[in-house]
Image (cartoon, rainbow, N blue to C red):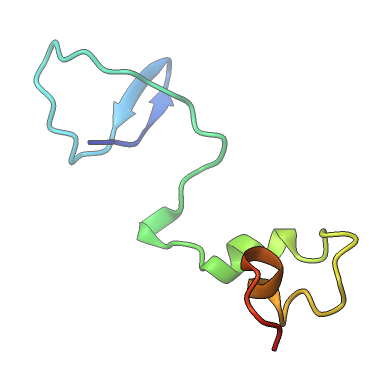
Length: 76
């Protein structure tokens, strides 16, 4: 199970649902970014948008015939 929290004045404060007994050993790994608030998740489209237009040297029909180039299926 994974719990999230914040460091406040040098102490890790976990989310209220983290019901751990005193003395429980834990491992802490800092996140690169702040997690989404209020359970809001970014859509797949918005997560992939940062990669748009970065591929170079692809055939003009790469999007239409992706399965052909990846798996050898007939072109459309």
